[in-house]
Structures are given as structure tokens and as C-alpha cells.
Image 1 (spheres, one colour):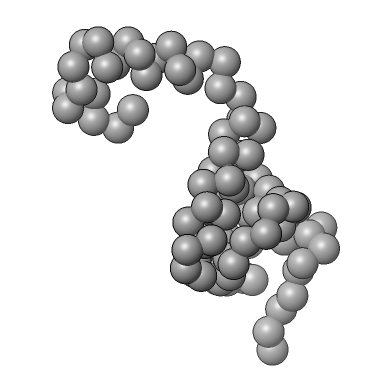
Image 2 (cartoon, rainbow, N blue to C red):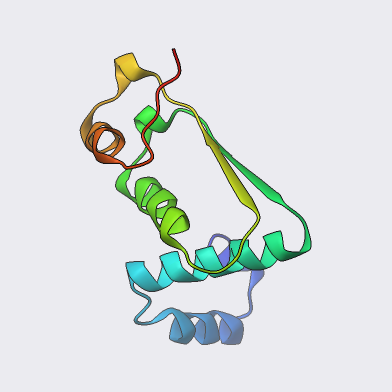
Length: 103
């Protein structure tokens, strides 16, 4: 909830009850489903810049999109600086089946 002041107390409580128990896996599944629904109407281009600074949540989303089985017209364009890749991003990029480096 980014702007709780924009909601009434009742709406905040309803929202709070809806998200109780929302797991990381559920959120990833729901964002994949939402993006697939959007792309059903028109192709979707997702651009992620500076992936070398990506956190584990960002990397989990990319992985979930790659594994998602529903038909979707989504293209993911991600950039990173090989010289600056470290931490979770480094391990993910090096181990990823979709790793590709332009020369």
C-alpha cells in the first residue's frame, strides 16, 4: 500500500485482510498473471536497466516470467554492466540458462 492516506479506514482494513498470507510465490504468480493479461490485449515490452544492481526480488520476477506457462506476448530487455555485476545478480546471471553476453 503505497499511499494509505488515499484510502478510507474501511478500505485499508479490507486491503489488509486481502493481503494477509500473501507469500512471495503468490505475489510472483499474480504479477505474472497480470502481465500476461495486459499482454493479451497488446504486446508488452519490459525494460530493466542496470540489472547488475538487481536485488533478489527483481531476479525472482525475471525467473518467474521465464518459467510462466500461460501464453503471453512479453519481451524483456535487460541491461547490465559485466564489470559491475556482484552479489545476487552475479550468481543469477552466471547460473541463468538465458545468460547471453553481447560482444
